[in-house]
Length: 380
Image (tube, rainbow, N blue to C red):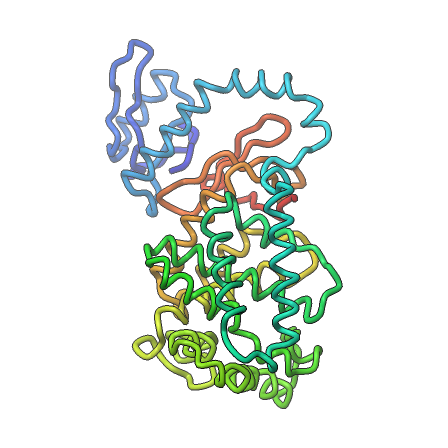
């Protein structure tokens, strides 16, 4: 749905909403296909611009967009009042969400779990049973399913100079993301705990690789690529004597397999990939995208990449349910727009992946309508 000046209307354009006169009468109904007579009527009535339908529009999308416009119209004075009353916060560009959701107790718990994972990974070859692994996975399960805004802790990693630091942080994040997805998919607690343990161990084979190989950066040669892919076999060799449940071993072996057969080591396709492994594969893909650079992750770019790149690789159900979760998570996040302005995400269109932001100058920008503006980056 787009706004168009009446002088720019063309015969055949379709009206998106009722055109109401100053006497509160409907001049033209939503869905009317404009002709010369309609356009002349609008000009005679002194109407300057109207909303037209676009090909992508659905009735629900238009309804939601119009509801949002009405909310903005009715509450613009309230937003202006808040801006004046909170000037100090605004002057400091105080982050709205990602910093405020990080609280001391769960952050300390996160760090404690990271330390314990590091110790276990360092001693993985000497383990005689699975007791410590099960205990840690249960702790992660509880943490992932009960900590408010738990994704914030996976985004805000802090370096602690521990053994296998990147691997430990990545394994923790993937375990949390996988637990969140499994919870959203209504898996039972015992199945979620199995998925968490599989996610925790999915890259354990990298403890046997040189750092330059385990920290894959996309510029490795074919020999290094083969060595990198060997972390699947190395991981299996490390845990096979622990007699872990079969599902956990399958997660480790299949977490790089994709529905379209482009994965490794066996190039499996959809029917042969375990559902638990698909969850961990997606969690792994998401975390790699989040931390592929040292900059604060642009969650919006990541969502687009996941939808575009993951479409043929991961179950659409997993992608869809996690995207809806991200939709809620990113509400109120501070961002920088492509035109240099800073803004706050205040609304997400439920029927399609697009956002409405409010700039620090008080302007409302619907990114589904203004295609010249996009989100450049997010702020912590």
